[in-house]
Image 1 (tube, helix red, strand yellow):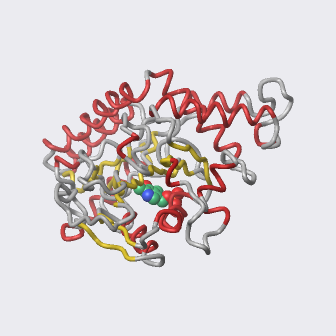
Image 2 (tube, helix red, strand yellow):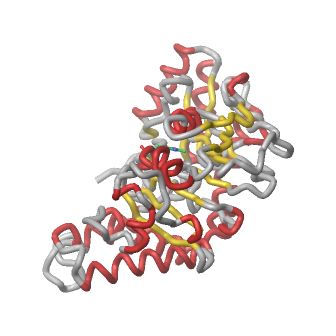
Image 3 (tube, protein in one colour):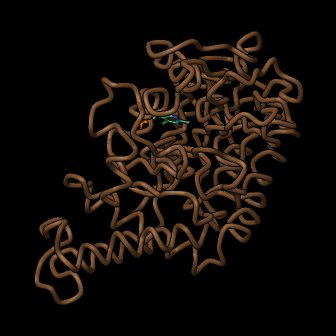
Length: 360
Ligand SMILES: *Cc1c(COP(=O)(O)O)cnc(C)c1O
């Protein structure tokens, strides 16, 4: 068996240890004679799995008691609609547009209320995070929405916007559990897990309890109402059982590693290897303003489309796969999530150095 270095933006690399453990438990989970895939979500065994996953996540993120943790389906994109349906009481919200995902979320929210575009970095193809220190935020806004790490463009907020007391909602899909967060600064945090936490099919929503309520928009589907899900502890209907089980294993892996402080340290070391190389390279160039660089997604170009394509092809042959940039951006993108070992990035940089020698 040989495993590649997988730089995919999502679904993405998972810790090998977790995959191995899951393989060991595939046919017989802890002596119960069946796979987690085969068991009832109402069984005691499964109840322990989902409860433990929640408890571990609460511990890792230090989630205050006045927040609910929900394991839901529909991906991050489903939340683009669920958020306005549940939170838009005044039917007005502010959105900061830092890329495709924020743009999509804003477009969806417009179906349900007024969306005020507070800031945007579209003028420079989303290569930076706009200044969010003094935005035109008004009291009648139900929330301010951000996409905290922009998977496609490789930018990340290093400082949260000044929301002037208005609730903050954040899509953290591609930076989930990559560093510590102060949950109390947000009204709602959510993320599809397939970037940094687990297999596609789960979105985790962390929501302040006063926002979990009955007076949502009247047409809100039962399944999209946070109260439905919170009242039944994410077991209103059959949840994505197996995927939640894998997420739980990743939470344990993170705890064993030393938690999110330690994870951040490792992510910074790892990203530095790649960014330092890009900053001195005569062939490759990072595309993002340095101050806004993501630790997770690193886009870069040679400036020559044919050479970019040649690089992606030769890298894949050498075992560095999924380095092609998003179809809307071109160039390359290395996603170096939690589970990508530092060694993978070091070897990639070695490969890039050789490629540069031959092609400059
Ligand atoms: C991938 C991604 C999404 C979309 O996730 P789905 O689960 O496919 O809907 C949304 N936001 C961000 C930041 C992403 O990286």
